[in-house]
Image (tube, rainbow, N blue to C red; front, side, top):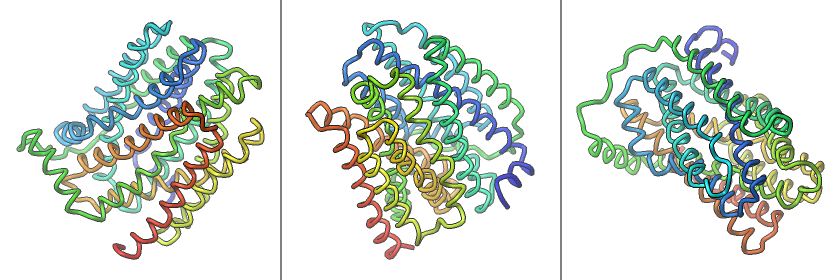
Length: 395
């Protein structure tokens, strides 16, 4: 079975994949719009890094609650509710027009990512319930490919779109795409699952924590998946656009092109590597990720030459994300899908939030962007040897 077979024979996967592409594509218009707005308003570095960090914070703070929400509610109803709230939060971004309204921007980013994280966790929990092990691996890989393709198309288009039509129009365009995604979701036909309603919130949260800490394999796998969260480059890319490449192109175009080039390799990676990824080869994927990021650091002296480094920095990322996520789902009991996925995202997003803030802090202390990027690459080299130890001891 391949990606096309899965799409052909499963209507729900076709719908979810279509919605994913539409919504993710539009998300980069508002994402690029937010960071372009901060640059245009001459926002301080702390505001840029905080905006990036807030994109991850909801999944960290609310993960225990989110997992219970996913397990207590019907998937289709939950998906439709979350995408509706996301629509409202994006529309309200048009009212942010000055630095004095940063508080509103931060609130809207927080709310949007709250509902986006619940949507993602509900979708991934649903996939684990309705798909076989092989189908699940393909679905996760396809998810990462669609994300990367929408990332590529969205970032490339968003930079040009904002440059000609403005930031507010980009926010409104994102709203239109979400409405289309909502209409697609209404066509889902999901089988009935027994919802976990016998226990209260606190008991279920406690059960989830105990389950993870008792299951050492899942605990380690969550950490391995979390390393991929360190590839949250939003702060780094924005700082490059604001300080290093400010004379090359407008901030919107720099942010758009850098992210689009990286996303090309994110999309190609799993397509090329899918047949070769297994427990033994994952060591080399982590090594490749680390050295790829270091190559990006070495090429940052030139905007266009840095594209070579960006391609290597993104080539292994999607495969690492998909494989470690599939490993977590396969080693988890069905009764704990929602909570384990939520806690997985909590740790993953914690790493993303920390690295977003740390990059801004190190730059404030005087570290150049090449050094910051190199330090990031060395972390993945450590992760490679961590995986080698884990594979020998537990798998």
